[in-house]
Length: 564
Image (cartoon, rainbow, N blue to C red; front, top):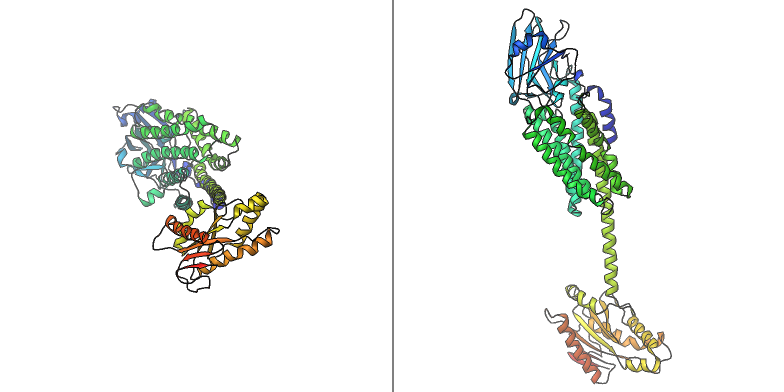
């Protein structure tokens, strides 16, 4: 879709708003300048004041006049159209061949927006076949482009308006594409709350607003006054530059941009906002030079951004690759506006078609960059979580037997209780010290491993080694006590099989209790340990239990019973 739209924009070059001549029936033939106190009619009739050979317009004077010579073969013009910028008023004169003059004045606030994107229009006084000239006087023009793009038109858009309609469809499609990253960013931010997602949304929103106010979409939808769109364009441009620099500041990976360049980007954002706000609020301060100075003042921002991209690419930033591709058309637009805006012998150019293409590239590649960064950070986060989980498991696992340790028991107990594990069995090997003394610690370790195998965990049994020869089982189910006893009785046979050559069988004593109400681990274990001590005192190799089993074995008479 993006490639198709890009091709459509390139194919549309002949009807773009940057080619004002396509919409113009008559271009100005001569121009003159004077003060606000000068009589416009007298200036229009004074031939010596007109300059017809020099097309280098100047806005140094308070009032600039444009003369349009009409030919009998030309369609009768109805509108004066020009590029939007701050001005005070427009005076329109229709001069007939017999010297009759019809005049109208339109203050800046009353100027209408044209269907030609970025232009204003003013209805001419009645123009007839007897009219030989139309003179337009512009009070306090603030930009040379207002003079350079001025023309008369018989209609608001060229021909039957098909050109403007086609451009409207293309720009509307592009505006629709700009909405999609906002939806994606909203989804991304729910999962990955990073500042660059918000700044990318701000950048996309400012580009969307720029499209609305610089094209004919705003005229179709809202039809605001031309001067309102003029200052809105200025303010939104500053917001676009600011959000773009802040997106770069937060998007480039840590350590992959020179710290000085990264620190300069927020200052560039503040500078862009200040410039645009001042230019929009005070367009007539130092009017003859303010527009050029305003354009030139963005040069440091452009330089810092280009250096930041070069440095990030040199350092291997993956994010910078997406930004470099996506921002290249926008950088070219900035260079075109900068060069033509500050160089007197160049006509000012806003490069709107390149700007539209730049919007497309920015949306396509930076959104891909955000998605790629999202996936990368999600993968890194998942890897970190996995490593943390493995480290946690290692810290909660007994290195010798592979069973959970005391730390795991303390952490898991509440969850186990919630899952129905309401029985705790404390197991201690009988005469284990003698095994170490007679056979050595290596054999003792082998015996502990064999015991861990004998009391193996299951869906309803969780096994823990608390240290030394002491083990704990958490069990659930109606036959929890029976399962615990089976494991205790299996210890001698399993140890004998896995550790042959021992002088005597390895047995264990056990205390088993059921949890009472919301009894905690400490209280539950203390009760089981007391029963374990009773089993030891009664001769070892037996169980003492305080549970209510559903199925009683011979080793489990009711309540507190001794198992041989």
